[in-house]
Length: 86
Image (cartoon, rainbow, N blue to C red; front, side, top):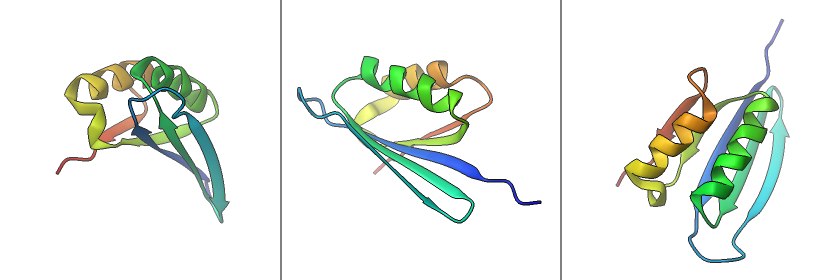
């Protein structure tokens, strides 16, 4: 039996009106891709994605360490959260 995997990639674009979400599926993978204008919007979306079964979240570097901590708290201990670093 194959288990599906729901992953998300969040991009922080700190300007008003930059919130969008798209989703795609391929085989057993489901990807949610979002652009968000602020951390509070990102935390709300993360809680919703976790309720839908997301298991891994990757953040763009624009979240920084403070954003990473906020998203980790919103996601909970069972969800892996990473931050792209350059």
